[in-house]
Length: 336
Ligand SMILES: [Zn+2]
Image 1 (tube, rainbow, N blue to C red):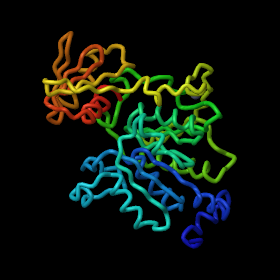
Image 2 (image 1 turned 135 degrees about the horizontal axis):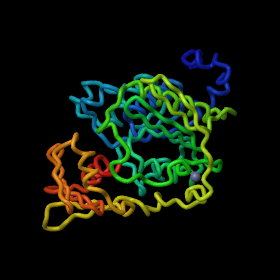
Image 3 (image 1 turned 60 degrees about the horizontal axis):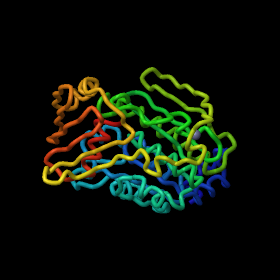
């Protein structure tokens, strides 16, 4: 085992003691896409004791361009990402306890899913679940490493419970729909998640071995421009999460779905959204599907899913009773 990690042990900041600490650590990676596959690969190879990988999706062809753990065989076998990741990584390092979990992380299951972890790593593509991670991290005193990548850029930051700033000090609340671009709208090139995920893995190792030089800045990279910036983040005195108010965990801002009886439709409602501009939303959605709108409703069809959106932010998914699909479409297209 020492031989397997010899190059890493030679690196003085890690050494034998650091290696032992990595082996005694347990991490949870939430989201196994562009970032998650890079993080999982490097931490399993580094010999972290336990690695839990949580993801809700199946692999699609457009994932292969950047999600390094998956291949065409996985798609033919219709494997969920969590399971494909577990299978591939067990072949890489059989001494690591690897657990793939197929789940959509939400307010009701996140505390159970992170129980026993020393560290949480963010491999997500949506803001809402990050607020949830932030709440659970501060509440249960488990540090987490935020990461996001889109187009040619990426961001990462460490959140250490009891040592502000936290994620909500940086992003006080969810953005209105259509403001934040996503991979579905502006795309992504693979080096952006590769480098961002690598930075997250580095910070994760530092936190696990108890290194002194834990980075507390927000790091922002642009692989196309070749730039790397660090931004000092100040704690926000009125940050609810830092004051122990875990609003996302308590579901004050959660998305609610309701089956509309007799209509064969599901309604999705986000109490946090106060109102949206259908005109702006139409402009945002037009590259993703068919859109038409007037002052009271916006009709949007993508991948054969027919949706109606109202100015109060409500979405109705027609010809379906699938609440989790409706929720997913809402997060994908309306609130990102
Ligand atoms: Zn805070």
